[in-house]
Image 1 (tube, rainbow, N blue to C red):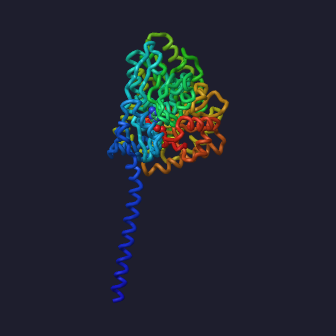
Image 2: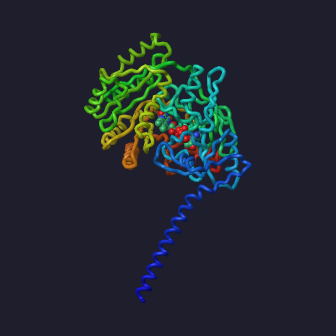
Image 3: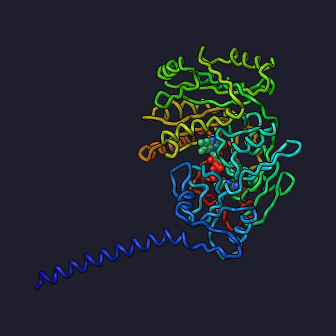
Length: 516
Ligand code: FAD
């Protein structure tokens, strides 16, 4: 009898444990999904909140493939007034949802998403590119890809003057970050080539801004990480679109010779100077892409990397229209004769201006076909002051990166001119009194298995720079601690937070950046 009672007690206990487990599971799945059912936009707003699983799933991921941040819904605006009504409602009602504009979602850590809030799909406001009569600027809808800006302006013989390496990113997303590449040394980052913006603030106001009109908003939004408003139109500076580019890569085994030549090229005047300058690092523990060199030289390049461990690739381009102009031959000869690359290790491609600017898409297609595009991207982008670039090279490239078991992806390293940044804008570069800063892009691809190791390598690099007193600034990162953001914005933090109070007091916008 007692045994039966004990069995009964055990069975009851088992039942209770099962019940408690089910309850815990139910309540946690409720907490997660409750975010998805909270937002109920009134009919008067005339906005459709898309909540189907595939839309939500797409808006929860980004290029980084590291974080998943799930919004409650997505709107596809048909005009800027749709965005204005949404933000006006969110700012004035007792609602608590936040809002994130999303271009292509090419962010690395969820910066274009919003947990439980509304994502505004900016690609719904795209492809509107109107070149002015005098061809000095184009008005562009913010969701437009730069590649489409290029196609449309080139039809009229004009082109923007500064570019990112990759053109399949949105105008609004890029201007919220900065926009850097090999033309910055001459023409400044993309944010330095904007004349006017239409912005919808966190209060839902639609404002036009420029250096003269609502200038606080204009400077705040450029490099402002989406914190002060949603850009719906940008007026972009244009100039003549060249027809072709002479595109060079030269190899160096000596870091100082490499950086000396890079620095010389960015200081040369416009006529004989080059139009584009970047640089890459090939390491013996990484992938060495020899495809730019003729097949007969490719194994020599691989051997060179094996022999030296590290090889530096100077990459430069000169644009032109007429190949018969003596200046083009002069520049090419000058490059070949005056730079101290390893004899014989130079390769030149003659390509259309469009193909030159759109070169990363070729890489994208290759990686996609190998299933290597949609993988985790623990990228680390930094600006390093010129005075410490050798220390950075020795401490990071030689002592950390070269000692990694394997490295995958690209390592970029090139100088650019600091005076091309406008300090009134939100974008940050090192706050030092130096003319030249280096752009570093450690663009690694990971697998879920290698991700932790790569992230710890990135942390080690940051720690090395801190411990050695190298005053770096990160680009495209997301900090999770407020003190890191305060340190990042340095002398601009007060203005940055004042602008937040002014334009988005309810802190609705781009919460994925984790600043406020
Ligand atoms: P998203 O990732 O969608 O958004 C970025 C941020 O801006 C988010 O906080 C978002 O909320 C906000 N935002 C988006 N649209 C708007 C808007 N209209 N108004 C206000 N806020 C908005 N960057 C460079 O500078 N140089 C490079 O050479 C370069 N190369 C790249 C190469 C590759 C392969 C990739 C994937 C990215 C590269 N980038 C480069 C980074 C790129 O600038 C960022 O990914 C940037 O975020 C733009 O991408 P996006 O349009 O998808 O913006």
